Structures are given as structure tokens and as C-alpha cells.
Length: 379
Image 1 (tube, rainbow, N blue to C red):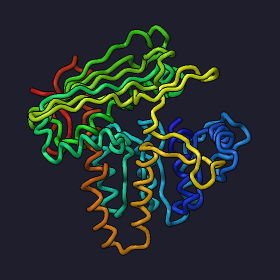
Image 2 (image 1 turned 180 degrees about the vertical axis):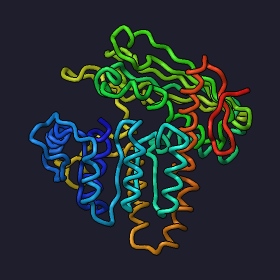
Image 3 (image 1 turned 30 degrees about the horizontal axis):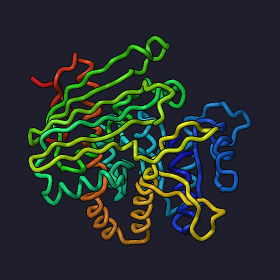
């Protein structure tokens, strides 16, 4: 889904602009490649696997694609959450920079391993937390950094998706993740991005009712209370059971109370709506990633929005890293680490994800973090 709707439209557009050259797509099944060729009939790309049986599983075919990838190049990882780490490590071992869909991974130990391998190889690993590029979030970041809002006290984030996500779109693997790990991590990262704070402890809760009745092991909803190192508290509410008729695929927003002001925004309803005979009611978010007529050739499509911006930023970063000395590459990566979700920043949401799982497994007990963001039960 994310490859067809966000990653590939952005990559193909970047190719037309001269930023990207050849494109390869690797999936477990040839059917995915066949489906993508229908979505992008005029775009050239090499597909892996090239199997006559479209449903045959080839879980390691990405390794063949990486072997054929030429320098300079990068690997974009858009696998299910629990499969990120091996692909990232294989890409790093082959000498490539990496862009990975959020979250970076699901375990702190894996995040540290990725960070260590990337540093040793002098490689760039960027986690696509696209909410950082949402101007509504960037505005909160700016006003917080100038001191206009004061210091964070408490907040509430909500991000909930229609039940089609665990039942259909991610039906093969949704039980290996959750609504919190897949989408709730956006707002953990956004809070860290806005404030610069780090989490101190977490308590989490989950409900499993509707999806259980439908024979699915994924949880209906997950909530977490995150206490940060300045005593601020963020409550994050997530679910995967919104009705199919919900006009938004994802309801989402953020509220922050600070010592000198408040931030409150609905990040889904941007007051831009369509009603059509074929599409019904559509809550149109023009800020995420939408198609428009190209200014120079109206017959062509231009994709615009923060969903693509968060992929273009690392592509531009990697372009800057190409052809420079090892010392200059190391210097640039260190500079990017200050403002980008490279492993040390992406680690924050990964740590909260792992804490959420641990808390739920132990009756919603508080989980705390050590100096390296490793998790353990409080007390």
C-alpha cells in the first residue's frame, strides 16, 4: 500500500527530475510486481521475483535485487514492521544507504545494532517519519523552539484507522504489529521532534474484542501514557477498528498544553472535501500526498505533499553523500543526525513501542528506560 500510494509515485517523480536513475522493486511474491505494473503502466522498473507463479513466496529475493543494485544507490525498506531489520542490515552490508518506513524496527537492541553497523560502514539510515514534514507539526516545532509555547506539560495524540487495515490491507501480518507500533509511533516521534524530550516511563493498555470475534489475532486498540524527562505526559490513543464507512482512512490529531500556550490540530480533517457519484464522501487532505496537474504540462501528473517530502529529503541527502570522501561523508551524516530521524532519533519511538509491548504483557505496569533507552519493568 505505502509503496503504491507514496513511495513509488515519489521515486518516479524524482527520476523525472534527474535525482533517481534505475528503479528495482523486490517483493515476496511476483503478484505484487504485476499489480504495481498495472498501477504504473508507463514507468520502467525491474521487478523481483520474476516468477511464473505469481503467488509463490520468495522471502529472500530482495537479496538478489541488492546484489544487482549499482553504486551510487540506496535501498528503501517498505516491508512489514517486524521484517525491517534484516533488510536494513543486508543493505548496509552491501554498502548502501537506507531509507526505511517507520518505525525503524520494533526492538531497542535491533536499533542499536543498526546504528552500530551504519556508523562502522559510514552509511546513512533514515526513518520515514512523515509527520515531521506536515506543516502543522513543523509549525508546532517552530513555535516550541522559539519559546513562544513555553515548556511542555501534557498532551493528547490520536491516530486511528479503518478496520480494513488489519483485516485486508495488512491481513498477512497485522498480528505481528499493532495500531500503536504501526501508526502511534508517529506521534511519539512527533512529540520528541517538537520538544526534544526523551521518554522516562510508559504504561500501556490494549483491547481485543471486535477483531477477536472476526477471528483475527490483532488488537482492536492500544493506548499508552508516556511520561517524559521533564515530567510532561503524552497520552497516545490508537485503534484499527474504525467503521468501513468512516470518511477518513485515518483519524489523527495532536493537542499540547504548555506553560505559555496550547497547540491543537486535527491532522485529518483539513476542511477540504469532495462528494462524487463514484467516490462518495471524501475527506481530502491536500497536505499529505496528492496528484495535481503539472504546471508545465497539464496532461502530466505532479505529486505534492509531505508524504513525498519525507522521502525526497533523504534522497537529496544521499545525493549529497555520493562521491565525497569518507571523512566528508562522516561529517555530513553527523550534521544530518541533528535534524533527521537517523537511528539515534528513530530509537525513541522504537523504545516506546517495545515498552508498550512489555507493559501490556505485564498487566499495564510501568516500564522505564535506562540511559541507552533499553526497557525494563519499573520497580
